[in-house]
Image 1 (tube, rainbow, N blue to C red):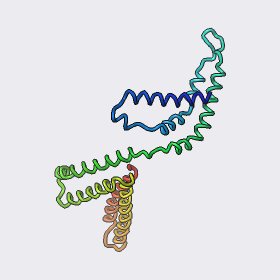
Image 2 (image 1 turned 90 degrees about the vertical axis):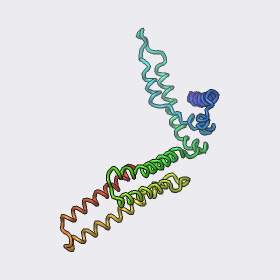
Image 3 (image 1 turned 60 degrees about the vertical axis):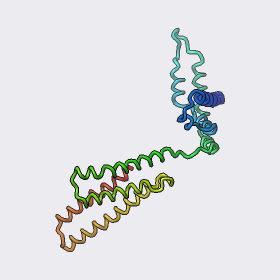
Image 4 (image 1 turned 45 degrees about the vertical axis):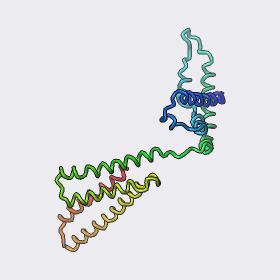
Length: 224
């Protein structure tokens, strides 16, 4: 029975694939096609489970006439056996099937992420002069902000054909450097207070500024 279930799923996967390819010949559909090895993984991953068991248990105990529902226990037994065998056999051998199928690496997510990061960096650079003019920042501050955004854009667009997380790794390095420098800044202003060159009010004001900067740097980690 289990073999019939597995064979039926494999046959259904192949038949529906052939029908879709025969009906839909668009380029976008052809780009989504995979070979028979990858389809075999989808077929083998079709375990039976809670839904099948729930359907079997939903069979009523009696018919409308009050007689016992015929072969209800047999239905539950067969479904339970199929679930047990598919979970144990297919589940334990699925990693082997995946390796046999030589599944290609999925780069679609990485490419889309790279595209979105690059586009957002370009939008930021394009909007910066207009937003700065509306806010009324000084040319010196605008120059510094533009340099920061240009550096960010360079990190995002660096090595587009390299590892997908290259830009994220470089951004993380910059963040870690800034956090390390921030700690030295804290020590420097604390030493000035200890030397009575600044008072506690100035110290707390500077510490508040640095605390805000640290929160912004750490928040970058949580949102990535």
